[in-house]
Image (cartoon, rainbow, N blue to C red; front, side):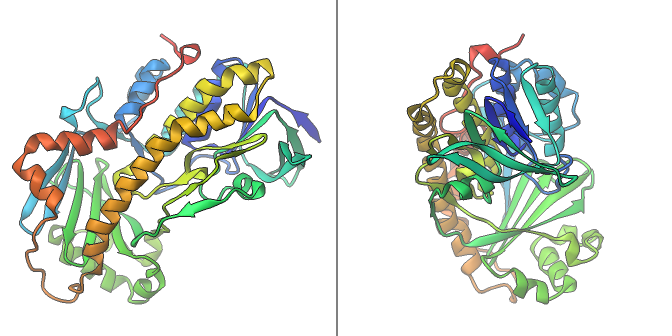
Length: 412
């Protein structure tokens, strides 16, 4: 079966869904292909940042989002050997929204999907995986797909946008090359119950040789334990009891609930990558979000960047797509717009990897009793000068180059 549309988007994550909605509001015929049957994926990034909350207001979706159960976090804290220290204060950032909203990503994506369905030129196909790019004289002219029932087909388009993540089928098919930056860690994700008198907000725990993060989700903590890069099999071989001891040794007040992690099957590995395409596009194809730049989980900024990529792409590409005049230079404009904020953000993550996380994880002290260690310089500075908390809060919450909804997509 051969079909036609103006723009086909591979992947129904934050970048793909937001781009699909915005283009549809511009009157562009757009089809989003999502390989899964639903958006339910645990331990996906669940942060909706102030810049994205502002975008939802501009799109007329702010009130709808408020109806979705979510947790508002207005501070970032670090638990040191000497106690809890504030690190980022969202009340100091500009704008209406002075918090990060933690909401299951499937609820956010369902909200965008419902808004898209109100647009006559928007189509979302679930359980439909992109299997191959279709090329004609080296130009990408569409995709081949496979549905859940095994049915296959071709969808031809003026533009294919790869929003299918760091393992993008579309990006691989185009042969686009990436530059990879080394990372010192992988992440183990797991859940722990949260009690009413536990610390609120986002909480990081640092000591010599170990790092953990607790994200306040109301009834539970979405918890992360950092391990050295490539050590997953080795650490898993130590067994569940050794893992529990590590966590409780690091954060003793979790001892009354650590048994809720019944086995290491409850602990999911995030293979951390930090990479960026040298060229985000080829004739007929554009990559955005994780397909263009895989981010570290540091700061939880990956979703923020992906959404802002989508907004910039929609603003730049809507008119040439609607008129049928799309050129390679239009795709290049998207990369030029989004390259600098991506590079700066990844640069900051690399500094944190090298100067804080790498040095912390490299320390050989995991078997010894914990000793008080001197906090890293950035933490010492924000302790002494609280107004500096606005800097990490702004970089995480708003980003380097926030994007705003184009006029054609705004709703009152």
